[in-house]
Length: 93
Image (cartoon, rainbow, N blue to C red; front, side):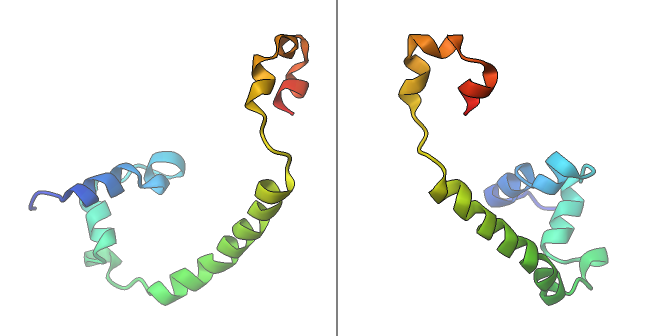
């Protein structure tokens, strides 16, 4: 196997399904998946994209209230001496 490019290295490092929620994945398997080689050659990309599309739409729609309807974050609130007298719920709020 030839040396990986810098982009391949960074994409493997930040491959969230392996590092956060899924089983670990070796670099050789990751590279085969990215280039659709061997076991991964018969993945139908159109079906895979269409299967994930509803979740993407839901995520974008749920971001709207969070970003545009919530009150702005006030960093100066933490510098207030009275901040430490509040309960944890009030501090997070």
